[in-house]
Length: 257
Ligand code: COA
Image 1 (cartoon, rainbow, N blue to C red):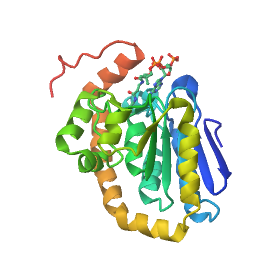
Image 2 (image 1 turned 45 degrees about the vertical axis):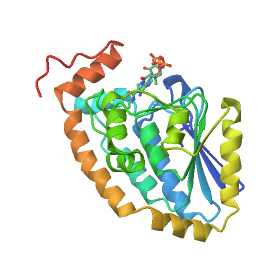
Image 3 (image 1 turned 90 degrees about the vertical axis):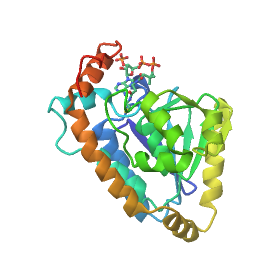
Image 4 (image 1 turned 30 degrees about the vertical axis):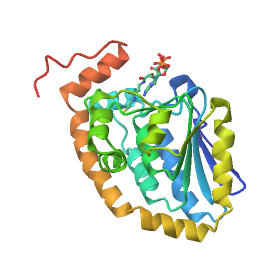
């Protein structure tokens, strides 16, 4: 198992940690593969009663590794893209998922929260969905779930502007449950996860299945994925990825639609 994803099972809580802090926990294909395997296996392991997601360092995750996006855009991507398996595993999970978010949660860092059942934010948490800034489209069924959660105009603004949403606003809008002090984040998320682990697991999982239409979510993910692939191959996306690598602002004004 790659050391960039750490897992630990204690007291029925399987903690999954994004552990690539030098790259702001940006998620690579290999990391998605481990995440997908872990979540899939957890569904079959009666010792796992709750999943807890968290990130090492000063950030939850910077989202998909942009260098890997650039490689895919150049036709040099991996044979199998594990991100799809990871997203499907999230949508299909009947094990409750808790997230502990500190610092920035960018792209899939935010959209995965829409599949979590209890979200704790540190005071410094910021939710950012810069898909349009990268000339892409939203993924992880977020084009359906985010408007459902916060309304169309707020969701449109988050996706189109890509500006950070602070922790208090995220709670007020119903994306997360609570905000706590940065140094209390892991303890608080763990406390909630342990509370859930003590509940009747069969009842929780039956309730979750009633509340989330996994089939609809997977179908939305697949539609998004088709658009996402088209966008990855666009001149706009190439400009966005080059700008990121060259640490400059992108210039889309010369590119016709
Ligand atoms: N993919 C690949 N590498 C990433 C990354 C990503 N998504 N996010 C950060 N990194 C790398 C940086 O390239 C840098 O690497 P280097 O030290 O080799 O130059 C390192 O992580 C530290 O990042 P840096 O930008 O210096 O940190 P910061 O604290 O100033 O900013 C972010 C953090 C997350 C705001 C900024 O890195 C960022 O905007 N990342 C891109 C996020 C993104 O667009 N994700 C895709 C969403 S769909």
